[in-house]
Structures are given as C-alpha cells and as structure tokens.
Length: 256
Image 1 (cartoon, one colour):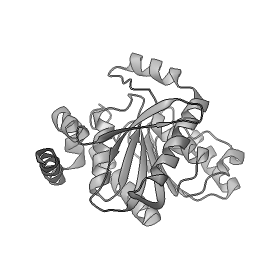
Image 2 (cartoon, rainbow, N blue to C red):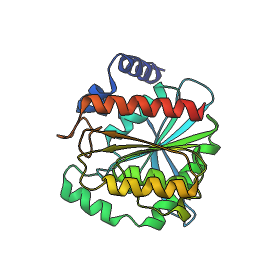
Image 3 (tube, one colour):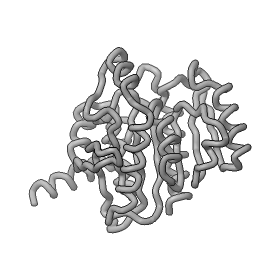
Image 4 (cartoon, rainbow, N blue to C red):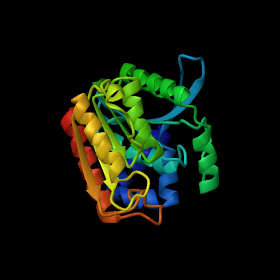
C-alpha cells in the first residue's frame, strides 16, 4: 500500500512540473521512470522482448506506443510515457536494443547499426498487438517516436495497423507502395536546420503519401535535429513545447 501511495504522490507532484523540466533533470526522470511496470512479450520468431508500461487512472484508455531515440530506452523516454499516462493514455515504451542504452554517440551508432529491420518490425508488431489486447486499452492505438524512433514509428505503423502516428524528425524515405498499408493519419515534426532529415526527404515523403492517398500533416521548426530533447545542446524549448502541444492535440483528435 505504501508503494502505491508513494507512486501516486510522485505522479501527483509531477503534475505540477512541466514535462521539459522533468526530462532535463536526471533525478526526476529516474524517479518517474521507476513508476513504470516492466513487461515482456514474445515475437513471432520466438524472441522475448521488453517494454515499460504506464497506465492512467481510467479503467479503459487509448494506447500509445513510444519508440526511443538512438540512445535507447532510457529514463527520458520512460518519463514521456509517464506523462502520456497522466494525460489519460495507456503508454508503452518499447525497447529495440534488447536492454542496452547509450550515453555517447559512438555507442549509440553501434546500437543503431545492430538493429535488424525485420526483427524490429516483428518487435513492433508484437507490441502493437499486445497493447491492443491489454485489458486497460480501448480499440484506439497511436505510435510516436523520436529520431531513430521517429522512423520506426512510421515503419511500425506499417508492420501492424495503428490509428495515428507521430514522427519526430525520423527517416521517412519510403515509397507509396509501402505507405499504402497505413491505416491512420500521420503527423510529422521536422527541423529546418536538420542536415539529414531534410526538406528534400520530407517533400519526397509528402509526395509519396499523396500518391498513396494517406493523410499527412507536417510542421517545420526553425531548429536543429533533436530539438525536442531537453538534454541535447540542440534543444529548443519553444519549438519543443509547440510540437508537444500539437502531438497531444493530434492524439486527442484521433484516439478519443
């Protein structure tokens, strides 16, 4: 009972603290991450995969699948999941690195290179099915990811149907033939100063989505890649807040 009360007190205290402040403070992020439940499932190819689950007070709520940046499933992403739960979603932060995480770019690059696309697709499809079948969720499910996870938010939405997908500056270089499998609308956040996920890539994506006749809304920010990450030197507080506001409004519109 004391653990439950402590958890509620922690979440209640977080309600008074802006999300950006929680993410930027390692102590608070660690405390929020500790409130999540560790869960596992089995993929079609027999692998056991892990994720972190945050549930709202509501007995039945839309689900949101979160896919991490190239750093891995760290306290920061788990804190965002806790915030989604506070907003009334059953939030599942999945792990595509099998429990590993990075704190430096060299390690992150090695981890990102180790991901096998087909295995990642199976992992995402397994978790989408798991979250849909969870007793705490409604029939509505969304996906959101950042950077590496932004690209996999889109690809996961192709591996198994979701009702809404959000991409934060992720790789969107896919043809219309593949995008035709999308079941829900897509929201994309992109940065004008991003040298990789740049305008030519995104404009090509917009054209392919139009060919596939799939709904897409894109927003551009006068910022750099990773602008929504408060622990990054490229963090842009105003644009991050605006992107978050647009993300939550998009999910509210399409999942409720």
